[in-house]
Length: 497
Image 1 (tube, rainbow, N blue to C red):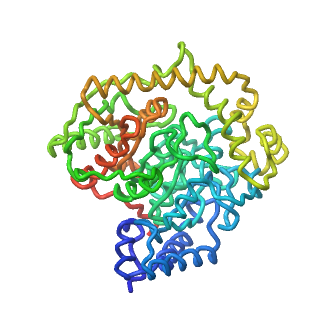
Image 2 (image 1 turned 120 degrees about the vertical axis):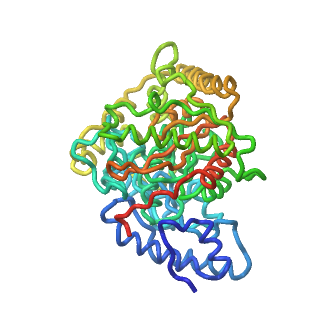
Image 3 (image 1 turned 90 degrees about the horizontal axis):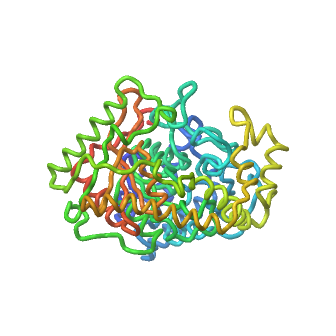
């Protein structure tokens, strides 16, 4: 029986094939990942906590026994997964849930969140809870993605250190609030991960970890028992090393088939590619160095040429109104919505899911952080400006409802103008581009695929893809065909072997 496999290239589908052929057990699979975590987690800080060994062994043993008895819970039966530490796990699993906040280290829940229970019912094994930007970034201005008071700073397995004075999304930054989840999969700690995205929190770290990932349509999943910053923008979603794994996990989450007889063809796919010289990250967010922008532009255009040669319907370059158009009555709408929903809807619901918690409100949280500054507000992130601004937010529910309705309409209008005007069903941009902002405003699903690796420092980069509402199947079809016919082998981190 094969007790070993390549943690960098073996995916969940591969592992399931090994399990079904009785070449490995779930207990052995978990052991392989735990060994990899033991070797490299101290350097990367991808986790906030790991499940206790006895819990993992008992879960894996039970799933192995079920398999031997001919009882399978589905295609992910006995496969490990890691979860961003915003999904509430019951105390019986041996892991807390903090959203990165020190105030919640001792919080306890007796019931799993809806997404967690769905994953467990599908036979997945939760190995650990991954580090994240504290409260998904709702704490202070310009916090480095992947930093929390509980988990510290998660690092990219490809770059391994943050450059001095690095910008928020510079080339050595791991990117996005679901950082630990992306790093864990790339570093060979797990074949699958769950993240959440408000705006860019799945797709940004996924592109920087050479992963395939999906943020499903906003509002279609049960988010009871998990932290979201907003209801309006947020959605939980999967990350993996291949499109097939993303598809299986997405089917589990959404409870419907996303397969198509044309899964590995370009039939029915048409894509509008945005100009990479226009659609790129602003310099204050990501400094460019000699050759970095040029390499990403060249590799992006190489993908366009390959797709055309493969027979995919492609329009390039296509214009799209920039994020400056995502306003209501000429004013900013995104942050007022985020502050109001965080304060009045999402944080109260999250805290209310705990049976025991040192804090029960946003005011409690702000006060706790001030009283425990050494732990909660250590340098260089010594402020809690976002939490205070949210606390002081006095917008009315009626005003926020107006902002949400009009912002949603603007987001859809801008994207639909390209979908309809160009006759396409996908809009694609560089992974560093702010296309995910438009997707969040519209509530549309967004995904990512890997493209290449910077010669400058080894940082992976990819594409961001948007489809219309509830058209996850189209995204997954493109991801599958892209991986089959166009993609280079995804980058593997050399420092984690």
